Amino acid sequence: MNGFPRLYAIADASFGNPERLVQELFNGGARLVQVRNKKASARDLLHDVDRILASAPEDAQVIVNDRVDVALISAAAGVHLGQTDIPPAAARKILGPNRIVGFSTHNFEQAVEADRWPVDYVAVGPIFATTTKENPDPIVGVEGLAAICRAIHKPVVAIGGIKLENAPDVLRAGAASVAIIRDLLDTSDVALRCRQWVALTK
Picture 1 (cartoon, helix red, strand yellow):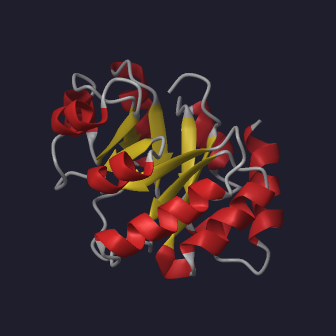
Picture 2 (cartoon, rainbow, N blue to C red; picture 1 turned 30 degrees about the vertical axis):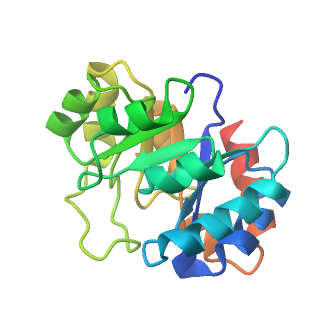
């Protein structure tokens, strides 16, 4: 994940049409965007990702949440996997060495284990209380995040309840990037909010 932006934007379909959201994020300067639609069929998700990639800036990278098959077929930059998705080693075998594979962890033990796997980054969270998951895991906190960042070698992407006002603390704790959903999307002007995030995370 070397050279990736410090802002990891997530276009979650629960906040609107993913294609529209991603376009607004691109307009706001985001260059690393994950497409997340837990309820979409593989066909619908592939359709959205294909359209997003067709209009993406040349320097943008699009990650597909959960679905390795969609990431492969669409030629997206990579996939982000959760604890109940296929193992990262299997995803790596499918996607090859040059695609991005990210993996979600929710505590110190999971992060240390994931550090040994063929992933490009380890996502850690929730750092703070979050409402974008129905049954969120226990809060990791900034101190817990810092302990993980000290212990593992892979880049850490922090996620969960991160806002403009607390993001500096998260980055100082050692996170390579911050993954943002609600604080980017739950606004009347996503592009403007994204520009604020890009400025903060430069």
